[in-house]
Structure formats: structure tokens, C-alpha cells
Length: 182
Image (cartoon, rainbow, N blue to C red; front, side, top):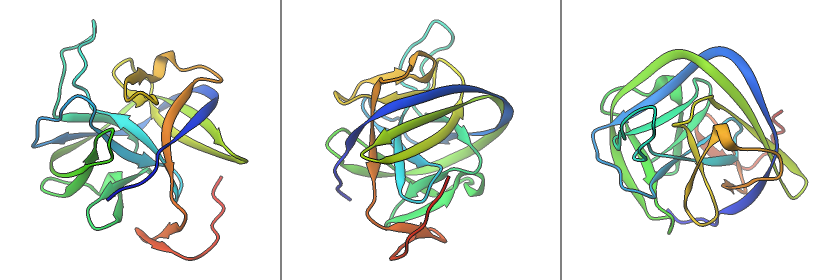
């Protein structure tokens, strides 16, 4: 699957209460520069980086992509999506690299826990999109140069990569319909 990625401007970063998030542990060792496409709306996707970056808080976990709200969607093979809360061991999901090459990986487990969350709103053209992610240093979006940026360091007017699909989705497949999600 190929697509064009766009830079989006961060409009707002807001701290939220404790909510349920998903942490996807795969059966693969993900490489630097690989991420998953996740989103809160039917056609806008953020690039969430894998955890192969060392931090002062924990060792790298290159098998993991962490951590967004249970209601979000994730990109799967054959142009399908799933809600994160539905994922279970042996499901297939896609990871992508900076050249938009995709690779199918197997879910080892979907760890659902209550964690402090944050709302990130971004804008491209006249559209505003959002995502709810865990508020932690280890959670990263992706910059234009393919580098990870921690969500805890994001501020208004920063830019990250995203992807807008032309068609909306309903029941995990693309449809020709106007859907307005807020």
C-alpha cells in the first residue's frame, strides 16, 4: 500500500484524565523508522512511532507500539481497519516505514490499561483532526524527516506527519459517503 504523507500543524495539546489505552506488542522486532497508522476519525491517520528509542525512563521495546485510546482505529492488511480494543493475539496489523513500504506483523498481545491521556488536535487545509494518546515520554509521533517526537514535547504550531484518505470508512472499509466526525 502506498500513499502520500502530509505535514500537519499541531493546534492544541491538552492533558486529560485517566482513560483506557491500548499497547500493541507484536511478534516482530520493529526497525527504527517504522510506525503504525492510528486515528480517531474515519479518514485521518497519525503515524505513531514504535518504542525502539532508549529513554531515561525505560529500555527500548522494539516490538511495541504504544499507546492510544481503545476507540481508535488501526490499519490492517487488505486496506482494512479495526478498532484497537478488538485486537487480540495473532491478528495481523500493518507497520510502515518512511518510504511507505508496509509490512504485516502479528499481534502478540493487546495490553489495555488505564493511563493518563492527552488530546492532540492538528490541522491540514481547512480540516481539524484529533487523536487521544497516552501522556508519556515514550509515546511518539513522526516528523517530516522520519524522526520520532515525544508527545510530551509537542506544542502549538509543531508539525508532524499524517495521512488523509480521500474516502471515509464505515465498518472498517472505505465507502463513498460524506462523514463528518468531531
